[in-house]
Image 1 (cartoon, one colour):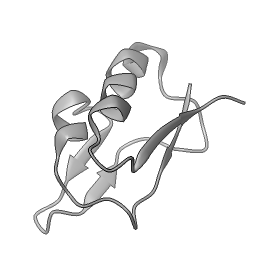
Image 2 (image 1 turned 120 degrees about the vertical axis):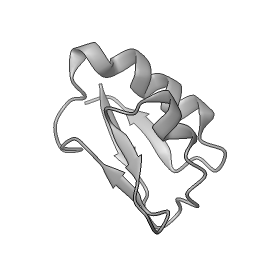
Image 3 (image 1 turned 45 degrees about the vertical axis):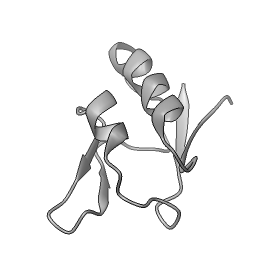
Length: 67
């Protein structure tokens, strides 16, 4: 599973961090830090959390993609 992250669209709600704290973190300014290489597949053990993060993003800044 691959994810695309639109950092310009992210509003810092933090729901992705709650759903997948190993993959996403908000910094002290409320900006999203992506904790994995988005050019690579999400680690297999994190796919369920990644899918949850995509579902809960209220503005669609996260999208799953297949390649």
